[in-house]
Length: 388
Image (cartoon, rainbow, N blue to C red; front, top):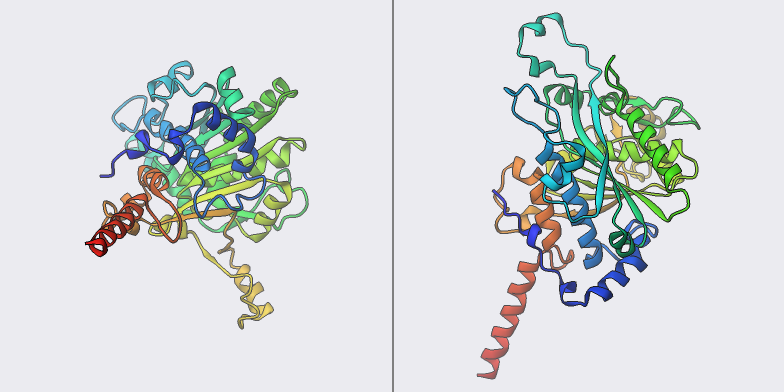
């Protein structure tokens, strides 16, 4: 069980005057959103960027707090709160954001007839998976340097979502999401959750497009950013959502993904299309989390030079199991944290573990603040012994 130290984090910058911190964020927000691909900000981790990552992590945490996990409840797989009170119920009433849209994902898996005899929650096709929130507070907009739109997704929760996770082969994006060619491919189950509909529920894709269209029209004359964030399955959906926004809306503002513990999403053509569109992806990865290493496998860019022939490489890619790593990576490790070093797979993948690691990470040479403190204490002790 990890502690929520990130809720009461102490940053090096916490001693700075509020005005100085405000100016720093307002002046650097585009860099924090990836305009320069986070160069010089990740190792060591910039404290301003750390605060932003943790802030978006709290929006993702709210998706879990809102979701009804009780399979015996008639409201299973729905949001427990109304839009107007959602963030308040999750302790985020002071963020300055207002939820404008609840989001639902639908599975396209067709179950066999015999499953009708099983409990209804087993075959729940559509489920609440997140929300869209827009910053409305003038003071917060001034602090951020722009009006920010957040799209937040939770991870896998229902049986149907787990079944979609198992559909791990790559499939071509539809024409409206890949206008150039059909070489861009993503995980089959992920695309299904994003594009499937029911008679009573629009697809997640349609909900996103409709809401973003309204937001872009309403705030057309303002500095704007769109941040798509999520954990686990939600991290993969965040990447696909960001791609869809930049493909659909030709004059979209800066679109940034901040993902936690996400699986692989698509092939190298999908990655190239993301980069071409200007979508920025920051992946927070725990090297001890197996979910970040699936599905499929990755063929390195220099594999041909290493002995894998062009012919063989093409045959391998034709299997529809060759994925590509996407975006910029902030790599952390549970092993660097004494409280987590012996944690289970579930602990390594837990969102709170990720937030705890982000809150304490310093650099690759000095992974955690606790480590840094021990190093300083040891140096001070040696200095005192030398003086004696």
